[in-house]
Amino acid sequence: MTQWMRAALARIDPRAVTLALALAVGLAAFESWFLLLRKPLAEFQRLSAATGALMAKVKSPESQQAELNRLRAEASQLADRVVGELRVSAPDEDVASFLMTELDRTAARDDVVLTGVKPGGRRRVLELEEVAFEVGAQGRYPALCQWLLGFADTLGQGATVTDFEMRSIDERGRIALSLKLALYRQPRGTGAGK
Image 1 (cartoon, helix red, strand yellow):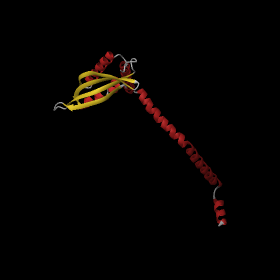
Image 2: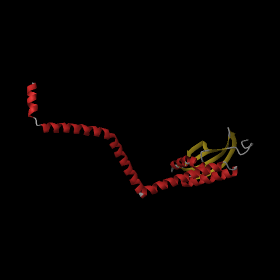
Image 3: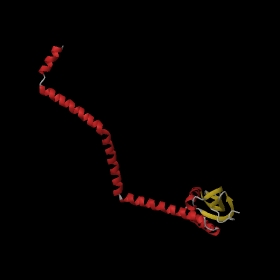
Image 4: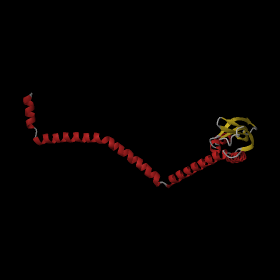
């Protein structure tokens, strides 16, 4: 068998052997290069796609305007929240006035009718002073829920609904809501909570 192989190898042109070896080395080099570059190439394609998407957003004036409007609305909500939290620490008359004004404003916005705001008592709760109010409102259930959900934005984080009652008042789906609202603030003086 070795003689047969020697005879077959002797018949092959030396240029074909050189070409086959060069082709094998070239394929091995190409495969090695591809294996080494696969990860960086995929990362480049991902970054290129992300850059294209960002450039489309930057070039689009509608998206810039929408983002600007969203940021303005968010800034307005934060400003309202800060104002609410600052006013809770004001004297009792100012707090009651602020509360009635803000509840009436948000009730009108959410299609709710504010039927009354009655000041309740004050008491000390741990290191804070609790100022209570009884609030009455009427409207449709979704509007009342929306109005209640907005209390944190309207009155700040120091406001809590401690008790509420809902009841139907007519066949058209209107509901009467009675709730007790507590505002918590730092005591105004040594005898503030008594």
